Figure 1: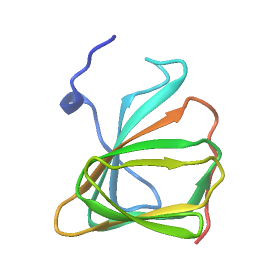
Figure 2: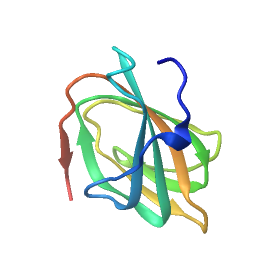
Figure 3: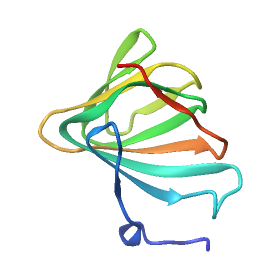
Figure 4: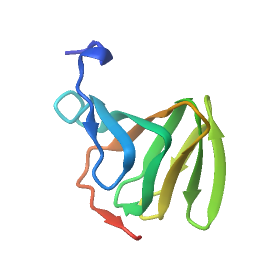
Length: 117
């Protein structure tokens, strides 16, 4: 199917995350090359420092967060674009009083996640 309503797709709690949910918008069933996911982190929520074996391309929809990528920290907000190379440690912390929400595109390849904290 080429068009789906996002509000009809389920959210799931992200294991290892704090107050974080993920919604698969386009998965391997619809696209052979890339998946598109939406993440929503409640204020104060986030993800611990970890690595993935696939790269991440992200577009921030709303809210603010601090994101650690490698040894650097970045303050991000709506309309920012984030690239995280495969294998690079990264983490997220939602800031402010509204949810932090972003789209995350990844290749449809095997992904191993290693939590580093």
